[in-house]
Length: 426
Image 1 (cartoon, rainbow, N blue to C red):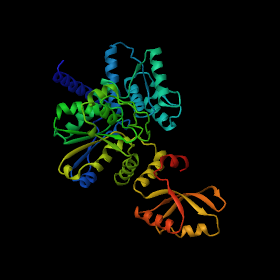
Image 2: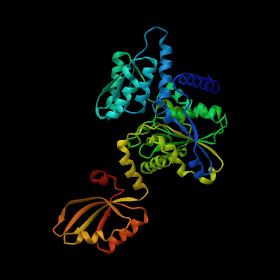
Image 3: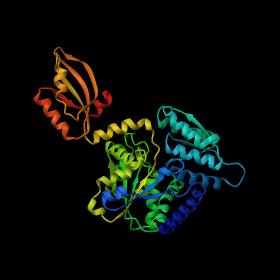
Image 4: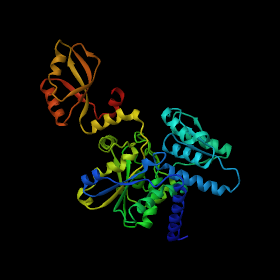
């Protein structure tokens, strides 16, 4: 089959998937954001996938997968049973689809999954889903799900690595063009985890909007696509930072990589997790919108683009989800302050004499606030070690403070960026 015919068949399949979805929810908004547009001097639109019934785009792929599997199963009274492994957005999309299609489904989650996520998934799936908690990590839950399918005959629903999932996710691109009245955007910025969303969107837009450029964004701690493109083959990362849990994938999917392998590694931007927290906090304060870390990736990428090159352009950022656990808010605020150089942690070696602490306190400026103070241990007869956290309102205040440390003979070590030490004691 020729590429042209294959692409036309894909476009038709995406249009069919759209019709399946329209029975469940309206197109998600394509919001022209005045704040970002003014800041960057161009027209910036946000595709608000955080407004689907499950607050992420994952519902699209799940619905298309279910519909196709049920259609292939035949028109009898019985429907296939389904299963998946997930502790996040995929589980919620899966559960919603089970209830919508009236199918029984089993969701395998790690034992460590927060109750909030378990309850939310149960609410979407109602009596149609059974949740099983297995193992301490995702890989153990996945193995249990695969074993369950082998024994029960249930259909495994992958989060991204299947053509039907990719086709469903591509409906995001179809809606974007419809909402722009078929005007071709100059650039579409997409977050990448397993690659299902970006594979579907690029394939559809390459056919229907050939002049559109693409930028992929991954968290710095999980560069599965970037590394695979650099190596020219799929690479499994040895270590992944799970902070951006919606995009922290160790290996890009097989089917998505077949589509994405044609792109250059230069088209993949890696986003520092601390800076991403700054973007999340800024968007919450200015727009009142709660985004999960993966949902803020595309917006954060705007910081690194050439402002001059953006002038007058039409840019679409895909906001992939808004399932944020507010118990994580203190961590987000902490990391945002660290990125902005407004909060630092020091270990101080101070003399064990009366008045030493008072002398130290007089070194602090009027805008310097102690957020943590902990005596660690007596390291010598005449000296003691102190862990201290200081927050201020301007980065240059720390230059003044450390200069005072040195002038006063206080020995100190800035451990703010020392990941090993700070994770142990902060």
